[in-house]
Length: 97
View 1 (cartoon, rainbow, N blue to C red):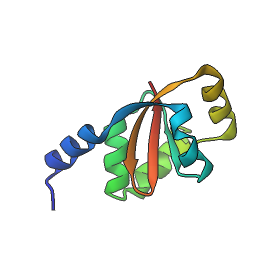
View 2 (cartoon, rainbow, N blue to C red):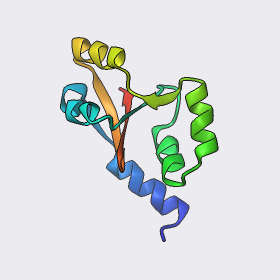
View 3 (cartoon, rainbow, N blue to C red):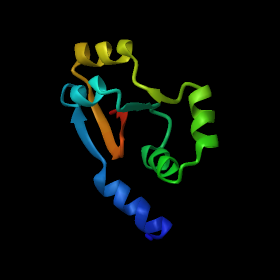
């Protein structure tokens, strides 16, 4: 099992910038998770990997993390938005760039 630092380094390496248009297939499958711009994407991914449901629930309650909505997706398509994305199977975490 990887150490905390190794896992965070790996997650950082797997983070990339991508257009929302390219993420549409994952949105259509219900696999995209919104991460608010004020949150650290790597920390959120780490929380998912660690299965820290209490923290995820707290973020969800504050609307800082959650399934991407149709309104968000429509807005991002119209603006041709770029996103930071990170796969934490089965999810693709997305954060507006």
